[in-house]
Length: 222
Length: 316
Image (tube, rainbow over the protein chains, first blue to last red):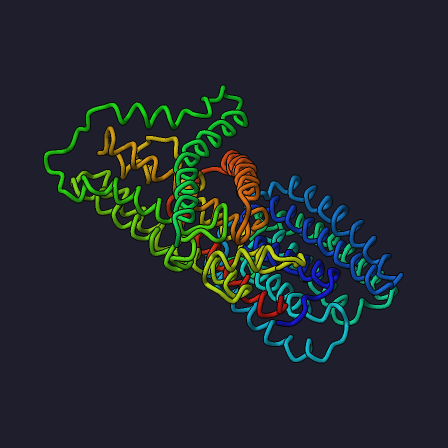
């Protein structure tokens, strides 16, 4: 029996597991508002885990990214998205392209793939966070899967943001985070991206009277 | 096995049998409070059982011996399960008699008898309930086994007392895989005990009921035993949950009588908390369509499988 890891590493593993749990909850959620709530929770866990890494590794710049995560992903983005959903009256997603149990099954397959992919890297790494790289990859894949299987524009954007969460988590777990400039840049990109996509939503609805992106597949109106 | 061990085991069993209806009463009370209704007394299930035992039993004239025997079989299997699960102490003789996989088998036995008895009289509702129950059961059982496998992987044993011993031993370790298993287990408990997202224990609306549809033909002492057995089933599931996820407070080997008493107090407190949580879950969730039930239970199964994967990945 190997000795149990330190309390910090245990807590971090627990938070990583929570992140994965929320990714699956998002995958199975049909209502857009609940999805946004789950996204906010994902941000909160991400913030806690970043703070924990900052504390255990003694890295000051990670405190800033934790604060940025809290501000942007827990408060601002969910608020913007909730406002958009209210104004677009897009509270229900239609039935996804693949039914939900099959999506979940695919998700488990993706998790196995991600874990297999991360295994050799985890063996090489020496950081406290090395075990969580597989989970970060799994979160990215699951968000990707959500973007693929959903029809509505709003849920696809939430999938995109969840993927960004996964990338951020991968960055903290693989290399203790990116340089501050890069992180600020990404944060700004995400914020501006959501604002622009919000405008797109209105345009799409104006054109097709629906947020179903399936309408975009035909080039001309017959 | 000496006389003292048997006496302790019997005391623990009597405690379980006596407390199971009270747990049902407590949940009903919590639900009533949460829904702004005036609550029934805590001992209401006991009064109901006593009243039913005084009545004369009516049996359908087509009823076979199986139909008559099933309430006793149900009650018996649930008592056996209560004896296997370490709810108060680890060194009781019956606790080591069977492992968790056999325990799932004991629950399956009860389910098969219940379904057969429901079909026995050939009424439409009985066989409808039985078919639904078997559908739920065949989905819930693998999920329950997967939840157990999470605990087996951590403790390296299939016996519940050694799992409890391993998990409750210091130092305190966080097992992320148990978080997944815990969520899956709550879902299985709701489905297996005919609680709200899957079945409504209070309804007699024909189209939605599962458990009630199966027991429609029972009356008097038979009905009392069936209801008592389902209370014991919920009690047993609660105790399994405590053994896997909050194993603290269960008396270790060679515990003094005082430690046993403390363990019993801890059990009562845990049951009170679990009952309140169950009432909250039932109050905030709406009943699912029956065809959403496979999705619900598939999610439970997948979460438990994820727990296994996370355990292998994080090595903790």
